[in-house]
Amino acid sequence: MKRISLITALLLTPFMSSWAKDGYHLTLKMPGVKDSMVYLAHYYGKNRPTIFKTDSARFDKNGTAVFNSTSADFVGGIYILYLSDLQTNFEVLMNKGDDITIVAPIDKIPDGIEYKNSPENTRFSEYVKYLKTYSQGEEKLKKELETAKTADDTAAIRKKAVAASKELNKYRRDYVKNYPGSLLATIFNAIETPTIPEGDHFLEDGKTKDSTFNYRYYKGHFWDNFDFRDDRLIYTPIYDARLDEYFSKLVLPWTDSVEKEADVLLRKSKGTKDMFHYTLWWITRYVENSKVMGMDEVFVYLVENYYMKGDAFWLKPEELEKYIDRARKIAPNVIGNLAPEIKLPNIATKKTESLHGVKGKYTLIIFYSPSCGHCQHEMPSIDSLYKEVLKSKGVKMFTVATEGEEKAISDFIKKYNMGEWINTWDNDHTSDYHNKFDVYSTPTIYLLDEKKIIKGKRLDHHNIAGLIEMIEKKEKDKDKKEGASK
Image (cartoon, rainbow, N blue to C red):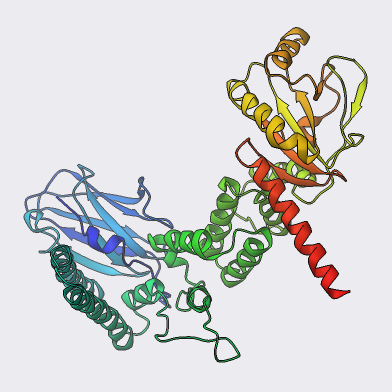
């Protein structure tokens, strides 16, 4: 039996309430169901595969189950009632202090559900019915589009689709006007996306079309109707999806841009409990998992400006220390910093090699292990890249064997044609390269410039040459600008 899944992707949020009463009282009547459990569950930030259980009750012989809570921590939102099979379920909008009775015949879920003392849920049901009709109309238009024979037919169908979409938006906006401050009105405000003004848009000269207007307008108005002061929005699947769209599609993937946008959202939610918690947690996880080079700088920024200043109030001291320790390890080797110095013996000559003493326009430093399968796969490609591109670019190669016996390292160097590189090993474990360069896996590859400034990190053979080209292009552009200004 299916729950009201149509609504899950479209709405959902809790509302700001001034109820004096804490908790909730929910009576569920399901004739014919007895002697089994029913669970009240909730979302948290997004539609997670694992739904968080809030409460449970047992049906009596009359098919009635009662949920009752006086918790001051309950904030409301989109809640889900699961029967004991954990398959049959439906959603209900709940607010702090609610006293709701739900009559839900098992054979009439979800369309035959009745709500007593909850006009909001009755209206919610009406909206779900409207959405079903809307979706059926969309499917019909898709089929018409597939069989359209002329451009005029296609244009006419698209016009119908636009009209239907405008009708849906009008439905929601009319609801907000008619029931201001209600839960569903808050939902509709939270999911509203900016409507870009129609027509052409020009730059200040009034003649040149502004090619970035749509992007700037959409981004600039993305959060217009989202209430960052309402913790109840966290108990819905809305916020995670909106954060993901904003940071992955609208915010430029540059460290300063991400830091700026993080500050804006964290200021908006500052002082709340769940909203601020989720925002800081989400952005931290986003930059930690990002494949964009340099995002670890944002992680350090968040730890230094929020975690270390006591804002991560939900963390235990030992949990907080893990964030701080991680940031301390990353901080010395973020892009733009001077690379830490390491001095290690050359595996062949036994003389001490200084990283800062390497003379070259660039230095590629590679931390590897001779027993590492990924290193064995990567090194031949790097060797080819070195011979074809890097050597002519003035790149010097500096390797550090992170483990292994001297013979195993020497055999590796010979096998993968690394003989003309500077090959070192940390045989007495005194260089502390693990912490200096945050080496927790191999291979770990950094690109340094002539002054040993870190220009790239966590590289592989796919992106090293491209990074050098980008650096050189920036240098040329800078030289042209300086030349033109003289």
